[in-house]
Image 1 (spheres, rainbow, N blue to C red):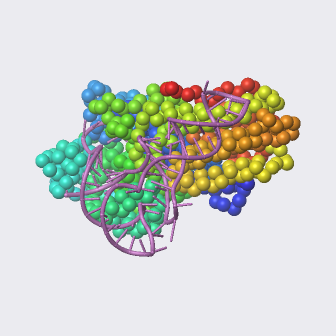
Image 2 (cartoon, rainbow, N blue to C red; image 1 turned 120 degrees about the vertical axis):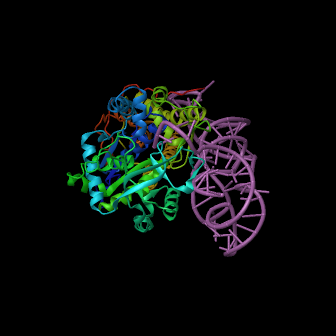
Image 3 (cartoon, rainbow, N blue to C red; image 1 turned 135 degrees about the horizontal axis):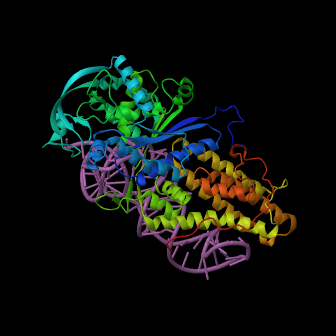
Length: 508
RNA sequence: CGCGGAGAAGAGCAGAGGCAGCUCGUCAGGCUCAUAACCUGAAGGUCGUAGGUUCGAUUCCUACCUCCGCAACCA
């Protein structure tokens, strides 16, 4: 019975998890919070089963829109982004995301990497100079085909104007077959499967070449050989995934992490990550990302979250209101990973009360309080156990196996519902064993099983609710020292303080 | 023209080619260690419509119907 993959011959499942870099042209909202937490949960889970991780997050700070906002604020773009990125940094810290690096695309190191990447693209011969004449949307910073434009608007409604400009093109069209072949051979590289199908659909449709330099604005990464041009924002933004690993100089990091890269993104930026990015990587002879995990969007009470409707959710207020761990749990539970989810306060409260207070919190409380009153300390697992005891303990293995399977496919919601089932089994066990009616060694035996289960449940909680898990570890006498990958070691006996309820109910 | 998502017990939502599941809510019991928390049982659905593939579909295919999103913010 081992949690650890270290002990077997299994490969250590290392992974590089990237969060998207957030565009600083506005304030953080619920979506940024959700994404950050999702990345963190996956990474923490990976560490729990004995893998090494590297986690990146950051901000995307170039582009015409930022330049516009800056001039509206009567600031230089640099001053503007120096101010605007801070809330994003605060957010990832506040939600307990554990990251190895926070990258800003305005950092010199990143600019150098992006420029280097561009030069490699040029050397690859997949870049050519062209004169673009066509419909351009400054909002999207993209060109549109004739057939996609109607009454001066693109299909998505953005205003377009007829422009003529010289720029460099990336021969994306030449990668159609390569990409198709790659994805046919790597079906699990895009999750969930519905997104995979979407990408295959896009690949089978029209795949025009991509204009990768711009001259219509200057707030971007300049290109040495092309005065007046800046890099297309997506070339700039996507290369952040290489910058954070120290590309191109840090070969050690690249070798260690790049083959195991997992990009977690929102569904809106799927095309850039699943088509543009792998094609560019292929051009410079780097591997495409190992996995692209695209999640859905939040609606609020059934409506799209939008400023004009005034229902944009402030993530900071949300965390203050519910608590970090609570909101982490609620967001992960309420959204079936990959699909859109609805944020509904009433349901959030109901779930908080039933899942966290009544089932999980109460389970821990009733066990710890019992121990405190009876023995004033925790109990180490007995050697002579009944079949029922062993049956319960074995359930945690069953849980773990299904959790590993589920998390491979980024099904965080499945992980949580399994955890709930496990807690329920613990509650059933208490009710059936009735330790309050037992005496002497039997009572002690049952409580020793329960202490062990509290420990295991706390370990499983950790990826989702790191702070609460830590406080349970502390109750059990582990402080920070519980090695989650060798969870089978016996629980230490620990002098108990009177336990306090872990979760507070809301909105009754 | 279109693209994407969804239609399943009162509500919200997993699921999977083979006796229809979960949570909340409702009703009835049990328990008292615990945050009036916990446990057990019951009621409640012809899994959008019509075809097709199949020994068998709610799960696959086709058509259709209805709803939501596709200006900005933006995961």
